[in-house]
Length: 475
Image 1 (tube, rainbow, N blue to C red):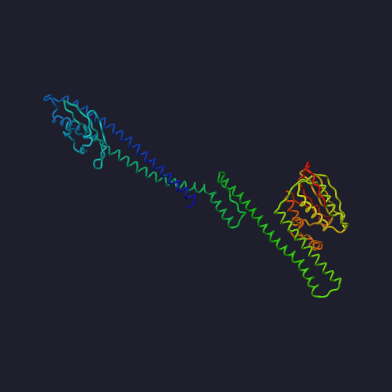
Image 2 (image 1 turned 180 degrees about the vertical axis):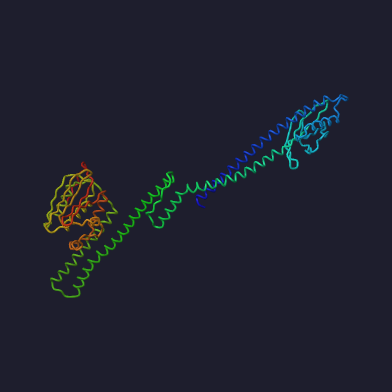
């Protein structure tokens, strides 16, 4: 059962119970009030008749010491006759509770009479046939006689009014229920509209439409739920997009890895086959062996870089305070012996927070890439300076540059702007990918600015710690 149907059903049940109990209470209250009024009138009437009987008994000629039964009958008959049209009936009994007079139609039993006592009024409501009466009883003392006076007052109209009240209220309740159901149907439909919209949104998203958004139709809690759902959908869509990108990146990685393995292996197998299958002169043998060695070294470099990336992701970084000057001195010792390039170092002394070996790897990769991108004898500038937020390292070359559309791709594994140039220098396209992973562990990233034909500037920012202890790096 749908929520709107449940809401409608329970509302209808509550309205029905409320109307039923309130109607029963109201009609019953009116009935009991009317019945109490009739009881009061019946008791008053009994008291008046008793007083009238005692007065009439005093006016009877005194022939006997006691009031005779015939006189009792005569007085009772006169009293009942005087009340014609009032619907009352009389019955008078003697001391032994034997009936001395009973009006026509007085058919009540003796239960009230048997429980009678002197100086005591009593009453009860009795059904006689299809009619209802109030039976009253009182004690009379007249000329030495102790008599019992009973009356019957017809109150059938009060019970008929109660039945009519219940009938009218039942009809009215049915009409009110039908009207309430119609009103509650529209209210329930309105209240549950945001839920139906959210249900549809979930179905659309389950079908693969992650860009679908639920329309907000209210500003209450359900409206806030719709906003939260849409926010969740946006986060989910972004997460799925990232997962799809990661899956695509892994597929590209596997494809590139297979390609990078195939190229050197093809060369190695080809030259090795040529060496073993035919006799070559010394020059060709040396050339073939050189190709095998060069491609083998490239495979070795690629394997080591891949291993570095995996280890870096798993082990993380051991951050400590190190001297920026020591890092630059390490680079000097690594690259100044290379006389084919012109290296220019300029930096400000500072203390930075970093993992020594990992940052060394980043800087070496950046300089290595700068060398590969430059012609022989080209100039490469390595600098460092303080700025707000940390200490910035910059490597600048004046080489071939990187096209703008490829700047965002060069940090991907195995991606190379000039594949033939990179392979000729044992490049595998993993240096910047490894550097990106390392800098992510330092809450930093590569910043690349390049112009084709003019050169490339690559930099990154590390946290500076002025008062940290210096850690000297020995090459």
